[in-house]
Image 1 (cartoon, one colour):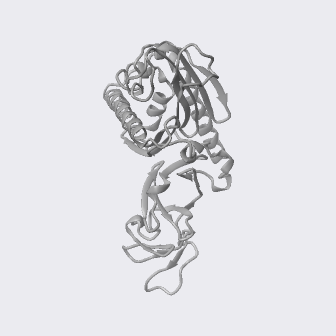
Image 2 (cartoon, one colour):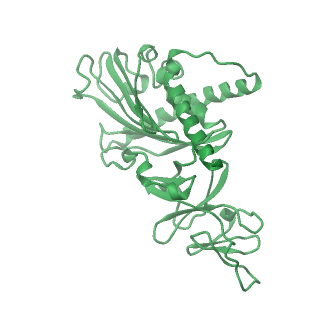
Image 3 (tube, one colour):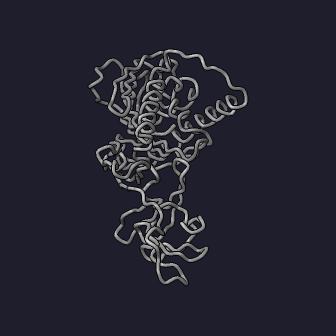
Length: 341
């Protein structure tokens, strides 16, 4: 179940070098990404229109790519401009070109109707390019459908248990009740927790002799992108009083690779210790460790559900993930209805 008329994160900007032929599968479609001499990134169907050979194992020739099976050459629009041994190139000899926007260190590809590729629908991932936010970019691959990971991100009560010794540190997170605000293409989640112990990975970053107040404010928007401001501070103050607080920013993106696999792009940035690369690396390492905990749990869950399916029993904590799945379902159904006329 996909919403196709969306901007999907295809890569971090640094993954696509000036001479690279970069392959990535999105929504079951093989895509070739390459950066032109102008710096622009283009995305083409990664299949030669002749015999379906991958163009990503072809050869760059300036802003063109040559299929190394039978030598067909394609320009940056996807048009075939040369067929060895054939003087004329039929106009229909071409591969699909996808709309692309490079914004704040993410390369986005539009997977639906090109006429509907609206840059106004891009997520607000400005934290990826904010000079006040220091981070290290990361990528993880999951062997599960992206909606299982979206469920996890929509319900932070799991921090108390999956991440008990890393990001969590207190059952109070699971006991707290988040607020939800409907967005046009997603959901805003506000979770605040008063007077709780520091999470294990926070203790080395700030001087907090006792308990702290923690907050997690994030938007989760189509097609599966989390944009978060979180942190901790001395307890008992108003939520708009950030004196002595540790501020963190996070941008995370789920991009379906296939029906059973997912690309996960993420960063956890800090803005409380500018120039302190050791703190930044430590935060990255802690988050990667925690996300490995997520992956182990989710993959075990999905493997068991596939082997022995069962009807899941809902609880109150499912409110956010149910709303997001319902949104995806409505929009996917609307696209399917429009496609059939």
